[in-house]
Length: 357
Image: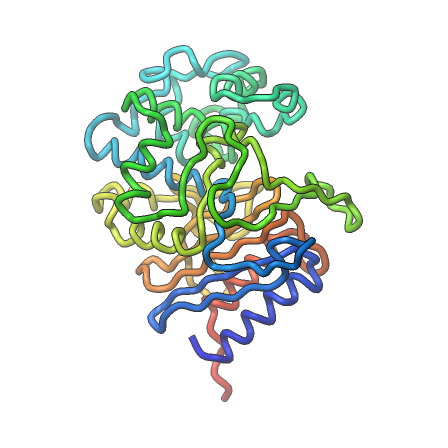
């Protein structure tokens, strides 16, 4: 990466704050030339405290990549098969209003081709409860009909990964948080990465404030502080906390073949087309690919949760990674939402400028 490339990235971060009105943004890039960290805006809008590389933030759906990795490790150990049905491990759990767990394989949970209704599509019911167990979240989903017959279409469903987390616990007899720690975070030294226990609303260690407009797109919508959040509502679908550096190490180890045998990694990276999701993406088993306008395809995952949106994407050879986080869940100006900013970041970083004739 040249100094001019870094300057372009920094200008983009500055614009995200001045034009996009995001509270703060961080970006860490690693490639064959080393590491670069940039930031703009504030970790705390009241004090003006700057964002730093050590900060921990909620990573939303990037949690799914960790959960899928654990399941693929269990498959490699022959503790389960991806072709096992949900009913084989969680009998009667997926049932009602047309849902049939005997027709849905673990693989279809992981690649979102199960058709199971996403409980987050019924926020009114979910929000009636002060605490959220996995069973409760699945019950909310089962009160609605499926989106389609298993294997006939694609739809992003957070219920799929609540069930995946329940499967891990049923197969291993241990808490999902403990399995993630034993198999991934401790071996890789990811000291800032964990799945909170139960309804713990805090973020352990240094962290930015997390600001939310509660999905209200209006520029003048009220801003709320969501730093303390009971993430049990998201659990295996989006409850984890991490850092930019830890996400670099995780995706480096994953795509570098240090967490899964080659055959299982290839299964993870076997994608299906997405629908009504992020443009130019495909989805594997807990991981997504983004094909950029200039040609390259990068692999990783994004995550959105109240007050924190993130992207972590890497080239398939593992040599080049970008991790970006906004400690807010909106963006105005030319972007519309943080994904617009993240897309510009990926294009700036992974699409080198054409040489001048």
